[in-house]
Amino acid sequence: MNNSTTLPAIFLAYQDPGFHLPLFLPALSLTIPATIGIILNSSVCYITWKYWGKYTTFKSKASILLAINSFLEIGHQSGHFVFFFISLTGINFIPVSLAIKLQGHSIVCDNIVIIMFFTMSFERVIAVAFPIFYANINFRSYIFLHILPIFTLSVFIFYQILSQIGAHPDFPVTGNLADIFGITSIIDTRLIYVPLLLASILLHIIVGFLVKYKGG
Image (tube, rainbow, N blue to C red; front, side, top):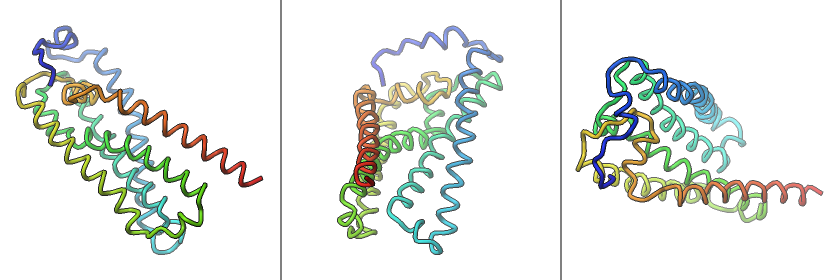
């Protein structure tokens, strides 16, 4: 939690109850792609679950990791509906303590998905660069090594959230995950996540070059 208890400018501007278009439009712009994302990610989870025992493709390490990532994305994207409801009904602001109860899972999933995007990118490089080694990796151990850090990270994030909001549980937020994320972060997470995302993009580019090189 920031040391300052000064009310945010957006609260001072729209603290009166009632529908405010400047609050609703950002919520709508997040909710529409979130709805599409939930449908698509749910499809990935369902198809992987349904055909896991029927086709070897769905029993691969990459397929399981993709399904896990999709499940976490659903958790992340579901949090946007709270922001949409709050802005649509004219409530506009809720205490951060209530927001955490409603959207804490989304914040945790959002953090984990970014980390997992990097680990899956690295996983693709290993699979393409060292296919024999990758094929011989024990399936359960491999998945476990992905799940363990994810679980550890989720516990740390949840603890961080609870410890940071304790001093100011009534601090007003719009329900936008970005607002809550900034309040509950001990450090500026952009310093960590931006390099991770850039590294993930670089790893995917490397995969493309490896596929082209190995494919002749």
